[in-house]
Amino acid sequence: MIAAILKEPEHLDIEEVEIPVPGNGEILLKVEACAICGTDVKTYRHGHKNIVFPRITGHEVTGTVAKTGKNVKSVAEGTRVAVAPAIPCGACYYCRKGFQSSCENLKAIGYHYNGGFAEYMLVPGDAVRNGCVNTIPGNLSYTEATIAEPLACVINGQSLSRVEKGDTVLVIGSGPIGSLHAEFALNTGAGKVFLADISPERLKMAEFTGAVMVDTSRTDLKEFISHETGGRMADRVIVAVGLAQPQEFALELVAKRGSVNYFGGLPKDKPFVRFNSNLLHYGEFFVVGTHGSNPIHNRIAMDLIASGRINASRYITKTFKLKDIKAGLDMAEKKEGLKIVICP
Ligand SMILES: [Zn+2]
Ligand SMILES: [Zn+2]
Image (cartoon, rainbow, N blue to C red; front, side):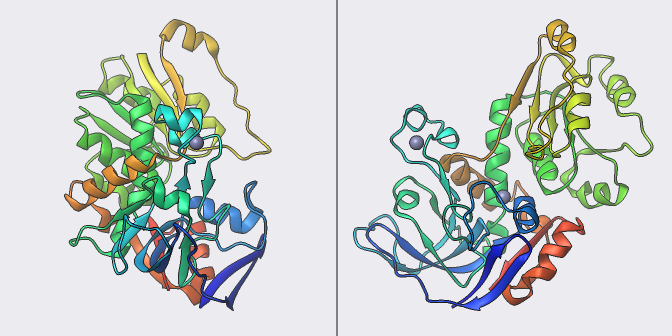
């Protein structure tokens, strides 16, 4: 089979390798689509703490079950599936509490295991056993179904942010993740949803979400949110960019008893922000961070997409062949569009 093998940062080769053989409890997936995530671009440029090279990356993956290993009963050959890439152990303290994204033995496809930028991919036994393999409903394409993974992370984030009916929600950053946050908040019954970005071009691409666009290159965000909320500010602020300045600023944009979510991670060599703790002290708001998702969030995400309430096809800007993956990574890096998908 053909695979894109990352030998080390910036050294990506398309090579012919053996098709893996599924062992006990494992599944061999014939990859049909694998979307490029922001992390894939970062890993391509700088590596990743959980990756030992060489590695096949790609974790927003869908395909057909080509072969099942011994003792796999839950899914049959030929089934169209999406694979949730974060694999919990199912046995540790956090898994037993239902917080699988905090699993103490968490492993991930595309990081610890080879991922979906290949013609075939092995799905580990723990993933099969712990509910990471989800059937794709018949009305969804493989490409559309790749949106289930980022949407699952958004669902996990908003459950920790406690977005409730009638809330005013401000999402900072209108990329694919910010757009999913906006669409999902509207689905959960949020009152007003604002999507803020410094790039008018990015905002234009996010208009379909139905949120109110706020162009911060020409609008004072704090003044705007204050005006829109009668001075109360936003009940929920979600920072969907990996930048320190918006994380600091978010503390000035949140209402009393509201919540701020640091959804985007900061670079590992610059993880600190200036934190005005008096804002927190007097505002009695909550600051949470989220990353990843639980297997159940992936199932919910797939159902939401299939129901049409999340407009999956609007997120897909372009598909590339596997042999052209570098062009896809370049396009994703330049943020020309929302999602770029690799179809082997
Ligand atoms: Zn991702
Ligand atoms: Zn665990």
